[in-house]
Image (tube, rainbow over all chains, first blue to last red; front, side):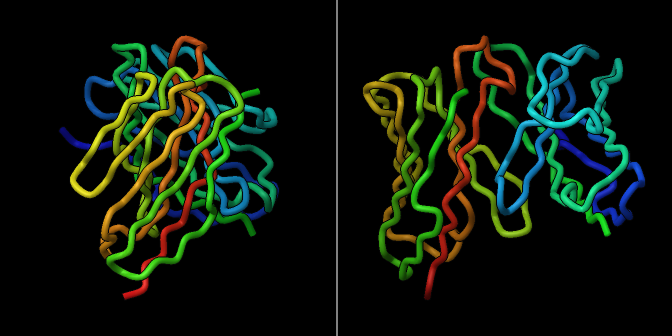
Length: 114
Length: 114
């Protein structure tokens, strides 16, 4: 099976702009989660989607939002970008078939905010 | 909320030496997962431990889950240059699974000197 794909891989934006990142999960996986990874804070959970519904949300401001489509593909959006939003954004997919799922991460989108 | 502490943050070893990283949770975990991230890459799932006192081996890697299910360790015997990367533990809570149940440690960066 093909792995998790994320587009774009690299992005440069300026403060105040908005950005949309895309994630295509492994075929058959119904759940997608998003993480922000920075050197200082490590991997921080953003949100999780299952069957087009947001199940959980991490401790991030409302500028961060996401959605999932009927084919399980997911997008996340960050509005009014700040310098501190520069990070690697990772999406992970999993089947949601058993109690403890392992997560399969995509290659990430490297966002730089100038 | 649940916190997962991982030590050490950095570990320098000579090639051929052993390496151990430790993970401690503030609460009892339902399961613990270990991931490896190569420089410039994304986290890749290594293993999941569920049972109290569980020990699993993968070639030169040995994973342990504490009796109280609050701590875990990863030990690498006779490190090789291919072991370079950051090792993350991720502890699962008892919120019914899903991504919010996984709290990642900040990782241990393994640096190997030939």
